[in-house]
Length: 288
Image (tube, rainbow, N blue to C red; front, side, top):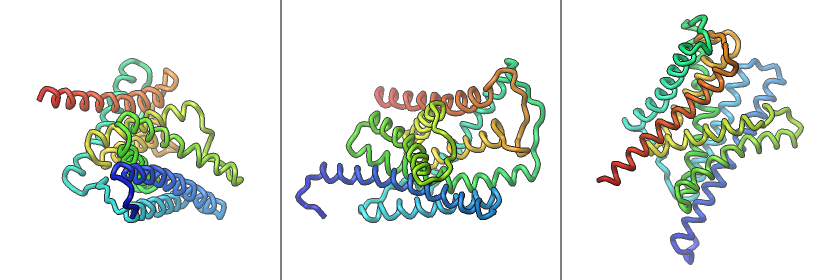
């Protein structure tokens, strides 16, 4: 222990370690998971096996590093409190984007931007959704929320006001896939895709909305719920892969599903609702 540092300086060093450690943990976990998945694929593994391996590798690395980091720094961040409030936060985080997406579908259909041609609700589809929820939780939602909205944001808030901490967390969130993409190129691996301006804008809005959930509820359960809901809506409703889709539709206006429903209603619409709630709470406290 460094006794000669005052409390603010010790807090500053702890915050910096949380920021760097959290970001590096997520980056290392994602890169290792992608590399492991590619190795399994080259060995003849099927798509489901590749996904499972990636999820296990990412969760194992990130959760181990998060635990070791908090233990090494002698702190305990109650980021996932197991309580009735945590369950309520998760349900709200999952439910609100689903409602926003449903509203988006209704608006698009009523305005003639798209026509819903078929609904599918089979036991096989729901089994696929549950399986994808488990994989998404291990590979994406849990590691990302614990590191970026958890350690990174907590570390930034030790020295920065909320606005700057928001900007810092969102910027580092964007830098994770950018760095992993660069590492894959440098090591001769094929990348998951190019980092385009559209993708960066999506990440910026997504990271902001996830952070708003933590600010509103004080826990990561809501942001995990939102994360899982968005991935489910994307993969099984709006942009389904193959035959596994909850509904089928025809777009009369291009990008109605991806741009209006997913980005406009699910992400930005949810963010506006959360900002309104936070603003109302701030005004109420001011009056009180």
